[in-house]
Image (cartoon, rainbow, N blue to C red; front, side, top):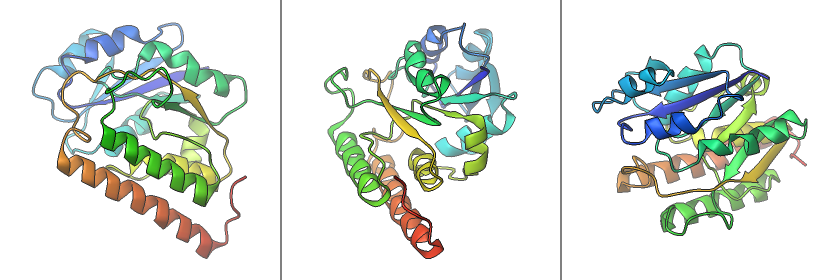
Length: 235
């Protein structure tokens, strides 16, 4: 199974070496670090550690993920992972197992289980994830608890989903489109630690409000788009 790991970065020099060092070398075919104008040496560190570094001049988490997805080298499975070392790359087998065993098309790493370090995820992020997950369960019938960034999916599924969200909406688009098309979405618990450095989203008021608006509006938008199209509700 060919596995491509895509890591969006922007000024993650203090963490990227740990992230790359912890990736299980026996499971990963290629690592793509998609960097958006870092000024702290992040791309150079990643390149020295063997990652394929791609420069994305325009900001946007989703945009970086989409760029990495577009140039990945014929993967069977694509993994998305933050570069701040809050998720633990060594836990990659947890995400890959349901796909390898044929039980899932998309896997999501939930940061909200008992293994979570208290305080690692800000209270407003915990509440926002709870609200979004509750709406997804109500409107789409998919039982999840978190919209965590540590996730994996079959490459052919991602191609069929035709993802397009370039910014904050990326966190939820894959889940919503996957649910509407009837793909199997499985959540697995992962550990979560305080990130190294300041978050560009939950660490700022603008980022928090922007993410909340894009995520919640997309949940509602795709729901009514489905109603207009007459798409049956996912099981």
